[in-house]
Every structure is written in structure tokens, then in C-alpha cells.
Amino acid sequence: MNRIEGVILDWAGTAVDFGCFAPVNVFVDIFSQAGIEVTMEEARGPMGMLKIDHIRAMLSMPRISALWKNKYGRDFSEEDVHRLYAAFEPALMASLSEYTDPIPGVIEAMEALRAGGLKIGSTTGYTRSMMDIVTQGARDKGYFPDHLVTPDETGSYGRPYPYMIFRNMEHLKLSASWKVVKAGDTASDIQEGVQAGVWSVGVVIGSSEMGLSQEEYDCLSADERDEAIERTRRAFLANGADFTIDTLAGLPALIGTINHMLDKGERPGREQAQRLQTAEL
Image 1 (spheres, one colour):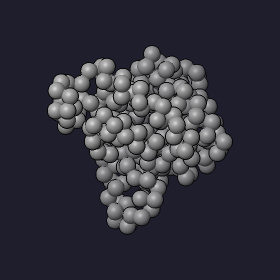
Image 2 (image 1 turned 90 degrees about the horizontal axis):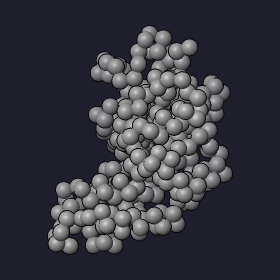
Image 3 (image 1 turned 90 degrees about the vertical axis):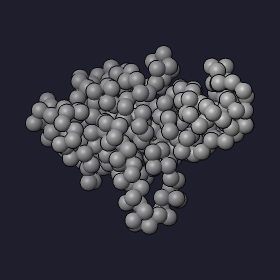
């Protein structure tokens, strides 16, 4: 049948940790300890990637690269990347348990997806040891997908490579990429989905791309919220998203929309500019 069989979800900023603050704060701290002051925007730029790749991407940013060369008199090296990561990992591990709260509406959305017979996989930029903490905390609070793949299981080829999605599909016995939806909150999530050939969905509110805490978001005026949502939505579409939704609460209804599109022979990524790319859910 031409129906969606499964969804694959990101974790931080999509399903748990509103605003994806666990890693971003640590990135800022480890660079500061190395004498380099980075902005929150720079720290968030590569979000969703395997974390050592994230550090490498930050060091490659022109401004940060210039600051590094000015301080140390040379370009950064792989040794520097690994030294920063050696500081990053224990700092993140020490704080991860504080960032496992499901984002509002997520548990109810999962219940609706399962009631519809869908399988639920997940991918992440965290390592397996990091996810051991996150999954336990989230399960204790009611959130648990059917399967998880980390970059540890794909030879450290994380996002935007599509391999974690393919491993989920294999484990969950999903029959075709066009019968799968990937939802996430970063550009690398979208690129992962696009490169896997699945339906790629950007989750706006609570995303790393939006970059606001729950409190900051709640304090926005109606106009400010609309502006933040639109800015984030456009960023996802610019990276190839087929759709955007405000939160995962809108995913069950969006899947109904995609099923109607499948009945008409449509597939992910085709005629994107002619599609309704934002689900008003």
C-alpha cells in the first residue's frame, strides 16, 4: 500500500530538550576555556552533526578560524579538534540528565502515531554513551521510540550522511524510503532526510534553529512569535525540507496529508516549489 510506514525522529530540540540547550552551552564553554569567545549562533550553526564533527565545523568558520590563528599563531589542527572534544564530552555527560524532558505534545503525538500502526525510529548527533543517559531520562518521563541509531553504529558517519536513517529502516523493516518521514530541528536533520530520499520535515518550535528556551519563547509577543516561526520555517525549506510543522503534535495529521500525496504518485523532493510546504496544523 502507498502509505507511510514509519517515522524517524531527532532527539534534542525535536522530541526532548526544548531549544536544544544541553550541547550548545558546552560548546560555548569549551571554546571559552581555550581562549576563544564564540557566539550562541556560531555554536548552533552545525547543530545535529556528530559532536566532534561539530567542533571541527566551528573551527572552520572564518571568524573562529581567524581568532584561533591570532591566539595560537597557526591554523587549528586535528590535535586541537580532539583536545576540545576531550573537554566537551565529560562536560556534556555531566549535564545531559537535566535535558531529557519531552517537549510538550510529543508523548501524545507518539501515542497517535502508534495507534495508526506506524513504527518510530530515531537518529541523533550524540554518541551511544550520551544517549544511554538521554534515553533513560526520557523513558522515565514517558517518551521512548522503537529504535535508536547513533553515529557509533555507522562508523562515525553521522549527519548529513543518510546511514543512520537506513539502519533504522533495516531494523524496523520499512519497505521503501518514500514510505518514511524524517523529522528534526536542524539543517543537518533536513539534509540527512533529503540524502536518504525520505520525506523531510522541519520541526519549528523548540528547535535549535529557532534557538529559544521555553521561557524565552513564551515571553514573545504574538508578532514576535510569528516572526520567529517564519524565519525558522524558511531556513528549513532552504535546506530542502518537504514540509515544516510547528511541533511534533502536528505530525500525525501531516502524515495523513502525505498519504494522500502518495496515492497521487508524489514522492519526496519532487516539485517541491509547487507543494504546500507548510502544514497548518
